[in-house]
Length: 111
Figure (cartoon, one colour):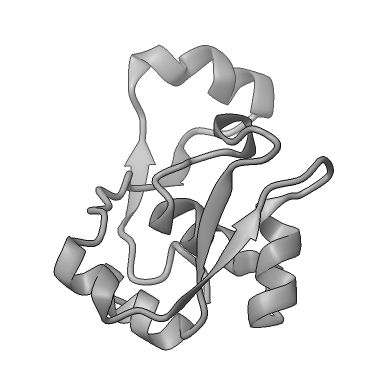
């Protein structure tokens, strides 16, 4: 499931992007609306079964998503749940939580 599901597509014809449009040879640029994600509350976290993962050298969200969900595109669920948007926000030895029931985690997100 894509994190862009049910997200509005915007048409950007702003002057600011004129050089980019010229470079690409297009009149408009379509992009997704920036979503505002909320982190799960303590009560919501209590309802989601997770497993602990100790971050090690070479770990990537997409690899963990493939391992736990069989879908590397769901990397963003692990990032969101841990409030760590990118791998650079995690140090070797840090413990992150991985939601095991992807359906429950997506429900908390509003998907």
